[in-house]
Image (cartoon, rainbow, N blue to C red; front, side, top):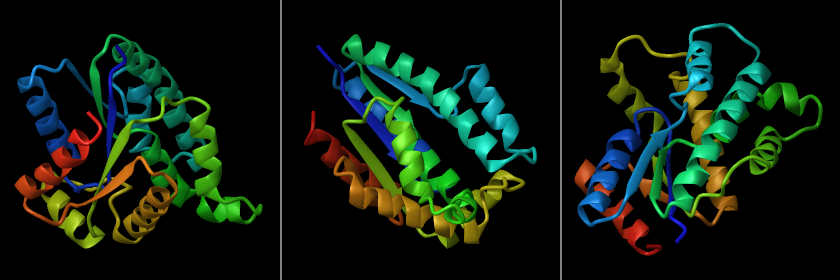
Length: 203
């Protein structure tokens, strides 16, 4: 029996890591076998991705490191799904489209290329399409207030950049019926309730 593939997306500080773990626990309590994973992954390619956070590299290089990690990660996801498990991933293909799409918008636009469409097409050659994606939507102002306590902000955690990333996410959601937008500017229990309602509709 094939398992169900659930992904969580959103800008930094939206609460997806917390909520995805809670969903995994709820489903396990209901007797389902759950494989909870994340991107960047925990293999050596994922480590290379994390290293890129603190180094000045080409946005193209960054995109392809993410995609290399995703290609390997996808093989593990397919294996767990084939075993009948429910797979929950904290970030997946839409993250690259939203984040690297924002970084590459100007250089690709100069070539007459839409960065979001270009990255989406490349991702579709390597991914396993999620059965449902929960996009936890929140304003960058609120998200940055939430992440300020974590220490030094990463290069991705800047308001003007996150505005572009959020706009990309909402654009992707319009194009992909699998994506359900959840208002993440609510108490976590309400966010979790809306997420579980959306997931229960496909289980």
